[in-house]
Image 1 (cartoon, rainbow, N blue to C red):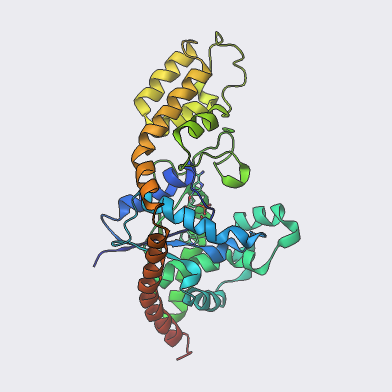
Image 2 (cartoon, rainbow, N blue to C red; image 1 turned 120 degrees about the vertical axis):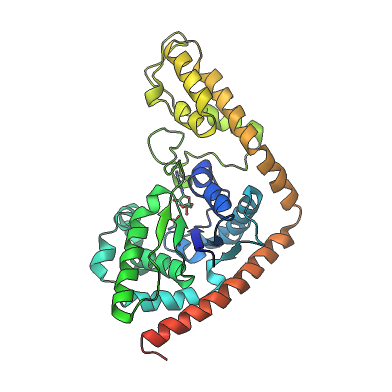
Length: 324
Ligand code: AMP
Ligand code: TRP
């Protein structure tokens, strides 16, 4: 039997280059070697989202991106977390073997508590327990994620070890699978690319919109005139260029150091590279968008297939925990 891959992502709507290069490309690639399950984690979203009116549309836009990027719903189960409610039952059961002190130590919990001091809800503390439930419900072994998820996965491994030692071997220890770009920087060149920081480039942007967006990127602030030599080592266009074409990245770095290319010109070159790389994606996305019912059917079918596995695991867990 092939090993199982699981990954989840919050319904943030249209995906950005960080999601794409840090996770989505890996989801697609891993389909050749593993049995894959990909999940849009709407319950996790509720730990931070205060305006819930966009969730359904975000799920739709995100599924379009996933399918257009190459997730094949025939091979890979693709579904929405809340459509398989067994995960919430498992979450409660796992919460009984997870010391509160482990959860309070998680860096993302501390960050989020700071960001939303008015809403440090119970679900926010339990976020990694729900994430562990996602993974172990399907006994997944390989987890494609970006670098920001590593602390969560470490905790998932600890919960698994604890469960297995208390109730006997049940779950494999999940391992992270990173891409070559596990932390894509945003247009500010300082922080990770993220929608909430508004430093992102959506992969579904039209070629013209991509050019405009790339133009807003921060480059070497010391380079004021076209004739000033630049420092690619602190230029975000330089970093982003490397995600798409490393040979050209090096060539442009040399030209930048000698003031042979200006920042605007370099930005246009980068935007072209992005548009070239994403052209097949855009074509598939436009075709899929003509059939919203197909997207709904994919998710309904995915939930049904996921639930078969989920129910089996839950019975096993309940027996081990003395509930059956
Ligand atoms: P999110 O949209 O935060 O739920 O993230 C979905 C997936 O994309 C997760 O595996 C993240 O680790 C990954 N990801 C998000 N932002 C970035 C980024 N800037 N660089 C690399 N990976 C990212
Ligand atoms: N925490 C992940 C994120 O913010 C999303 C997620 C939920 C996940 N459950 C998961 C990722 C299980 C991998 C495996 O991106």
